[in-house]
Image (cartoon, rainbow over all chains, first blue to last red):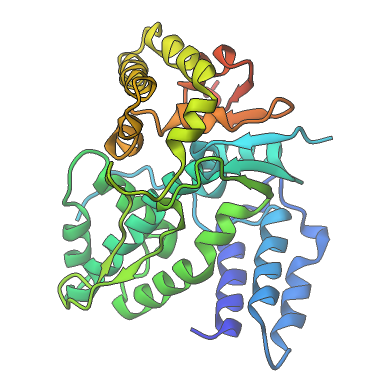
Length: 74
Length: 265
């Protein structure tokens, strides 16, 4: 997976796994706008990608779903 | 102003993807943050997350469809199946039943996401034990049936840490913590205290291997909560969801905050 695809996936997951009523979410911080700008760059370095994920997490976005409390069934 | 926290594995795990009410509390407490943790916590995190990722990728490698993946992840003893399932859930949200997509997501999770989930808000990762296991990552085996492995444990005879020297320096506090655990009403805490006290006695008798290997990383042994708590600094608050620190922290003069899910009204 390219770094561009990874950033896009992280954005999509952040939007999926963060409820709008989460009090820790700082929507005004502009993290998603910055990520769109990042995606227009021709090359993304690992530090760029790390900084983006840090930005998401530090503004309250979730990168994984909450714990699955359903029993494990096939 | 946010307190300066020292995060236990349970707090890092819960903050990243615990049950939603718990996650919100932990995020609120630690944001914005410049907190601390330990390589012993990283070792435990890796044991859950990297071992789970290896199990998931191994299940994907031979699966014909999603039901094969589920069947493989259900195998194992104790808490292993539920931990592996949880990691799978973090990777796919238990929705992506397309095996190719699941593998791409697992690769990405392993490449960057697990690392960033661990270190977000963490300024300091203490390494007083210089734990060699915490430095390990997933390895390719070259076998088609089980292409991935993660070695989450070490053997007593291996020289990949300085844990005995660290415990010798901290022997009085470590013994106090072990005694406090032994006096708990909880059977598991008592066991952890008893095991730790025995390991520390062996160390005091000159046996450097007494606190190593399974005596460190095993269930209810010294390498879990006790060793983690010893690296918490005086001006920090140990943050966890585990109850064992209720006994350990007062015994070693450290502040402790336990986060639990609030009871529904």
